[in-house]
Image (cartoon, rainbow, N blue to C red; front, side):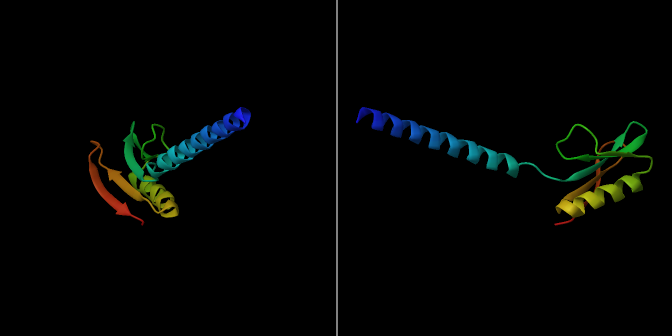
Length: 96
């Protein structure tokens, strides 16, 4: 009888751990977005996903970078945030 109670308690603990794991995984996915930022990069322009340190692509012209960001944002129903050379936000395009 003791062995049965012990195994049941381990099963309960295991179920609780699995629930905690899945709940935390769901919460992590909600915070991530696909918004694309067009930002100055060295002497060129770059597309960077929101929250990423690395750039997605590098372009000579801002218009080319904007077009690339629009294609990505349209695919994921996200926004394109266009920055000026000084880093301030110039425009925002919504693809929801």
